[in-house]
Length: 166
Image (cartoon, rainbow, N blue to C red):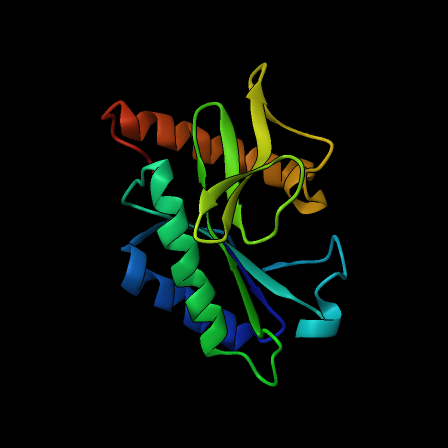
């Protein structure tokens, strides 16, 4: 899950909040700046602070709709005059791909139901995640891909029942 906001305290509050709904966090990034695009600046302010988090409990891909609807509801709780103050983007890592949930349709997105689409964001090929023509710039960043590769390795060990070093 990716969370970002112009308000660092609101971001940290929601890192705690998502644990209430999705269970214990087993990994979180250090505080980052969301600076690959200013797409959200008009709505949310600038600069944007970001955290990535993963959860102990693995999900099935079909749970993505319910999870995205819940994160949309959390975002809605903090809107002011119709503008979001926080963005929460759930997704999942599989051995072969990274998929994000979105409410916006596009040619490469697959409708899942209830207004939610699956965005194929990265594919795993030749030992690493790789960008696609539509991949968000931040997810294509070599540093983010390196982290996602590590998270994929943790996931692989988790599904094999191996002890994962966190």
